[in-house]
Structures are given as C-alpha cells and as structure tokens.
Image (cartoon, rainbow, N blue to C red; front, side, top):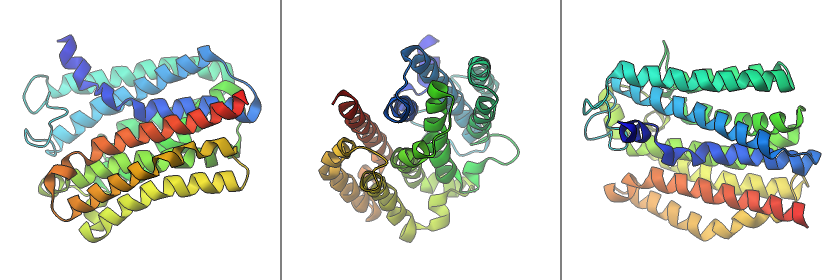
Length: 297
C-alpha cells in the first residue's frame, strides 16, 4: 500500500516545484545577500506538500469528471483500476494541503501576513485545478494559471520566506521557469486532446485547436529563452545566467518532435509532456547554476 500511495503522489513531477523554490532562495542571495539553508528546506518541503495535494486532487477531479480512463490515465491509474477509492484520494489531497497550511502558519509567524495571502492562493490554486464548483483546467485556464502559480508566485514566496521583502525583480526573474512549467501542462493537454474532447471538457489546447495549439507550445519554450536574454540585457540578472542557452540544441530537438507530433505521430506526442518536464528541470538547474557561479565569483 505504501508503494501505491507513493506512485499516487507522482513524485517524478516534483522537480516542477523544486526548481522555482530553489530559484527563489538563490535570488534572495543574488539580490539581497541573504540565505538560510534551514528555511530553504522548509520551503522546499512546503512546496512539495502543495504539489502533492494538487496531484492527488487532480487525479480525483479528473476521475470524477470522467476525463481519466484506463487508456488515458497511465501515470495515475489508482482510481480507474479501482486500486484506491475516490474519497481516499480526495482526503489524502486535503491532508497534504492541511500539512502545507500548518507549515504556512510558521511562515506567517516568521514573515507576517503576506505569507498568508501567498499560501492561500497556492492552496486554492492547487485544489481548484480540477475540483470545486468551477475547475479552471476544464475552462481552458490550466496552462495560464499554472504559469503564475508555479512561476512568479512560487518563486516570490520562496524569496519572501528568505528575506521578508518583496522585490519586483524576482517576478521578472521567474518568467523563464514560468513559461516552461506552463509548457509542461500544455504538452499534457496536447497529448490528451482526444480524451478531453470525449469527456466534454475545455482545455486551452482544445480551445486553440490544432492550428494554434502547437504554435503556442513552441512560443512558451522560445519565450523562456527570450525572457532570460532580456533580463540579462537589462541588467536584472548577471551575465552568468545565460548558461541555459547551452540547451538551445535540445530545444530544437524538442520543437522538432512536437512538429512531428503535429503531423500525426502519436509516439512523439506520448512523450511530449515527459520531455517538457525534463527540459524544465534542465533549464532551471542551469539557470540556478549560472546564478551560483555569479555568487562564487
């Protein structure tokens, strides 16, 4: 049963929250010269709890909405295969959010009421992705809102835990990883477009249609590099932050595979989300490494 719940958490996806949390902490030292490893670990744990709750409620919501089937839910088959019950999945997600809230109380004590605001947005954003009276994923807002939740909001929250101050440069610096995490969700929507259409829900991929949905995916990936370049040009970030540009050949390969998928190759489409998640991690890691190089120098 431990293995069942471990897989239900989808731990392979946690890099999508680990990157923005780590980036926020490193930006605290880059901009304000302050960093606490203990607070970083607590923030990373809190981000993982939020991500876990979101994953569990996502599985519950997609199952209740009829989106997940045995064919489509290969990475989260616990409900469609009757391994776990829907209420068990929902309750586990609420427990994860509750644990994140308890940790958030300490952050509120440490840094004040702004942390309450940030924490509530994070929990509400995670829960209402596929649950609640109006799940925003089913209204075509998933990729757009996740851009803010796991880009600027998570980076800003991590930075605020470290410093106790708001710095608008942190928001600008979060844009590259925000674009790429949005790309992960959009790749998921592209892969599941047939299943979602049958379920009668609206994702951004379905709203845009094939003619625009794939170009939007290209745009999200290119925007990560373009925004990073502008941040360096306008001296918001140090020159060493350009390190992710070493990944441009890999970006070309990803976009090529996406184009092949657009032409009807289901094999490349199947792996589009996983490759996008891997690229987000690689880009984020090199981005953070570039900032660390600047700090060491």
